[in-house]
Image (cartoon, rainbow, N blue to C red):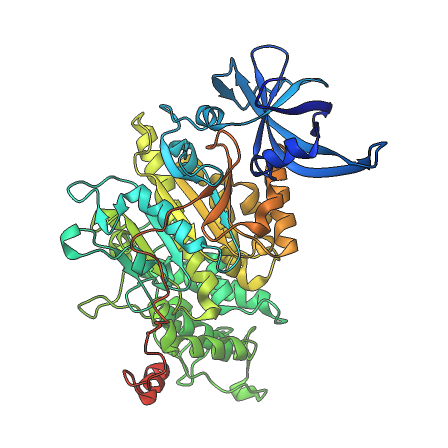
Length: 590
């Protein structure tokens, strides 16, 4: 037995290799290298070695004839690949060792070979926790061109990990912009639900990194960009008895109004992103709700109070709320209620309330700098606010912290769908010219459980549908997802199922641990046993871009992310003097 041998293979199966260590002294001398998650190198009887990760340790004690204690230790290991000719690691080759083969500790020289960088694996992600002198290099193209999941409990360092990864992508380090004199086409859009990442991407002016930040005061999302599902989610209560009639008349009013304001565009549909007036649609619905049909001979048409017969609703119903004749059974004034008379009282009341809600002005009444309203011809400028690389930096932060809860799902759905559609059409134009898409986009969904939950709650149906579509189809068009959550078990299974790379920080909840364990590949789920014991900033990395599962320690980003809503002072015991209570109430009322 060589000096580095620590035991022999006792049994072997595809799901587990059992290594036997005999003697307490041998185990104690190598205890630091025999912890759960560490690596072993097991001979295969030739020049190759099976690389396995330890997932369980069992000690068995007995007594010798003289009464002295005897110890044996059984290490349950999971094979993860083969070290060929003791030089090259191959995760795909998995020839298992037979009993009695020697097992060795994976020393520094072996780890260097396992984690050595090459032309493909050249993106540094962090340092190995078991040996901080070794940097984990991953396949950057494979990592960022596919979907990524980053999970971890509160306080595990999740936000710092996300910021650090994104800093390395755009070239930020030590508050410096490495790409100050150049700019690439890639773009990152961050859904920031707590306004944490503004601080992480704000550099001094001389660094020429102009962050593209959008919040409720600067975001412009005119309602006419919404598709049918988003419009109906916002304006129609699906649980009302006559919701089907609301949908049919609302759809008709929207399509007719789009045709009215876009006469140069042929084949306008409910989903066509062109201007229409929501106030005029309200007028139309209110008129349908009040409509009275004249029943005198030769009439059988809607009849106004002045006797005018309406032959074309489009010409009258959009401009104003009309006054109709009274319903009557008298022969001289016979008139009956229209087919929807009185049915839309709740519907029109809801429409009116939303149109007057100042919190929703970024959706229902956004205005340009000159005070004008956004029309169809402004569609290009509206798209540029998300893909800021055309004008500013290649990082856009959509601050969702001020977005009213009732329209959070619609906002996320609308922004993500517009970005998907841009990537789709851009890719099609590039492919028509026999070239590939050269504008990769990554959508970062921070605290994803807040708007793409696992349950099919109607309140989140719009955002869930848009992001699940990106998860399933986005990579074809250069659009990838980074899904970040502290409660992975509450996030849509469809989205996590499409993620090819995982970074898991400390998880303390049993349900979350079990869920993540199921998501990890079969040959690496053993490493999830250490999830509750990870230190802040430590994470388990597995996936297509990583040669083998590893536990790494991420360096802190500089600058760091932090919430803009809470500022902790050293003098926290001093009286609150910067902002008066009345100032807070005044802003609240706005």
